[in-house]
Length: 455
Image 1 (cartoon, one colour):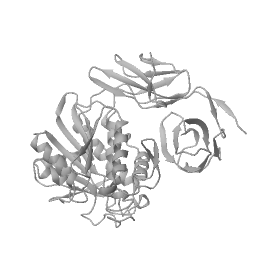
Image 2 (tube, rainbow, N blue to C red; image 1 turned 120 degrees about the horizontal axis):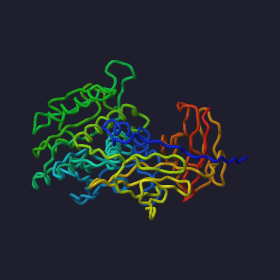
Image 3 (spheres, helix red, strand yellow; image 1 turned 45 degrees about the vertical axis):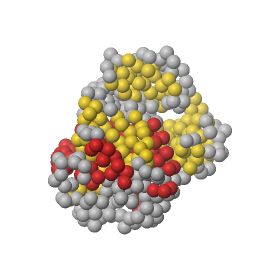
Image 4 (cartoon, rainbow, N blue to C red; image 1 turned 135 degrees about the horizontal axis):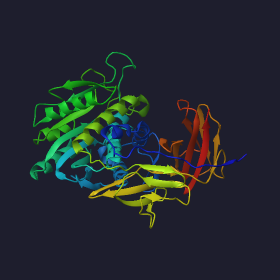
């Protein structure tokens, strides 16, 4: 039987002092990383240009769909200039630039190649691609003094062609590249948790053009924050990935990846057996957090608070003395006339605020705000069982489209995000704390929110 409950979510995000490096490390989302790898390696369908697609193969002559996926994701983020860089008849780099507010000519790159040698190829290099996208997702909401370039190389597998072209152009044009972090295969760790040597990873470096300073900065970050990682310094490091293109043109660069030095690389290298199921997701998460910390540190974060507090029917931006513009996240549109620090939504939905202080403009997270009826078990298009749930929540959909699934905790924080083209989808909630959760389902313009009780 359908039951309706009138609720108001009371949300609190952050404090009033702006984000810190640790705040941004904590935003790296293992669920989003897994989802991106799953979509980008063809384990599940996704949407590209409004169409349901499955990206199973990314070999250099067959990866236009992969390039379009990356470009569309980047264009959905704030503060990025996104371009396709065609370097030969088939090769195409995807480049996104986040200009620094104070020192735009001080440039740091975070990079990964997106082409593959076979079907799937989750570790090589959907993991690196997903990590760069996740870092871009988070840092694009922030203002930085220095410029960050998020670069996705094509044709790495046939001779580093994409990165060679970019590095050569940067050299010709005297671009001031101060550091390059290249991520290539960052998802496999064969050790069992707790065994000696668990979570080893390589930093491949050479004493070229200040590259050792990048290695030292990474080690300093490892000692300044908490990571479950053990660095292996490889010097002289391999030249078999895209960082070497920058060494060859006089720029500082390192490779961050799983530990080939200790023979702990994936056994499924360059084969279609390189699948999501073979990856160590917590290890992958830790490496992404480390590179995030490096990029935000070198980007030089400007302290602007883009968090929001919700209570008593109002949303309030925590940054004082700024300009404000509220957005409807469900429709991705500006809410006309809502330009004050406080906003009173007239309907349930997801909302965000754009905050401008001087030359710095930042967007808050989208926040689920609900004051209307929430369905507990059944709607005309969806049914969820069991509710209350102890372990696995099952979602039945009658829609003939990709279903977007968001699960929020009682504070309004997004804790699960996934998509499915199946009639029956599942969420494992066994590790979640007991209490109230909110499940938001969207497909074919149909949006329904359910209240879920976790026993």
